[in-house]
Length: 170
Image: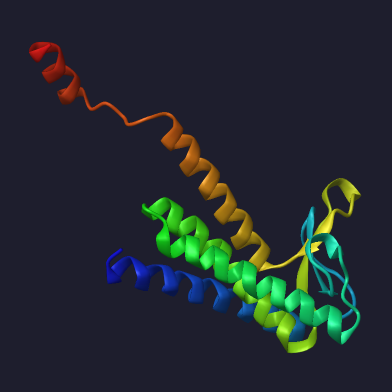
């Protein structure tokens, strides 16, 4: 891979992590204990997740936090490696968004042992979960990879001028 895609991927990862960390800082500075409604199904509500997705594997000890940080760092490095080796822009972008979101959560957890969440999803009064901008980037990256894979599975598109040329020569 040439230097340009590497710079773009690393820039995307850095930008994604910076946006995530900036929103977490703003949430920490401006959100009180009460939820602030945004729209009928989403509120701003400050929470600190000591575990991984949906607070599973909560780490309440220094050893637990260290283990989570090591696992998170390895996963972030692994996804970054995929982003740098991806053959096309769609894959690079998908993996880059995932790596940037993971990096934002890693840096946030390293600061105090927890990830800052502040977007509280509650459609029709069902409280589902609280998440952050990193989670949005990670989900968008996964979605982009799925779309990219589906488009590739359809095979190469046949351009009309190619189809006409093949009919005449065959």
